[in-house]
Image (tube, rainbow, N blue to C red; front, side, top):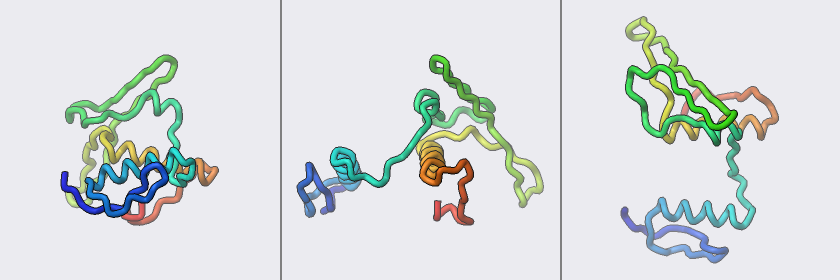
Length: 129
């Protein structure tokens, strides 16, 4: 980890200029926001997703179904296919997994709750996501 001067608030005290890793500074800022109750970046996840969620690591390529059960809550995810315009064939996609897939679901859940609608408008570019 490389230590650089960062802007961070610790327990309500501005500690700008401290040398620490940027990732640690982000965690400290997020913890401070949550503790103060002033965070506008709260994410929402359905309780079933909290109990049964996507895999942390990508399962092997031959796994086409991901099933998780916790008590009375169950979730089944089936890997899909996408049309490849270069080969003009349908290509198998893997089971969504890892940090980015989890963040995408949290983003979609949060957008649905904030907009009070099950319909979520997505922009044309993934950089706007």
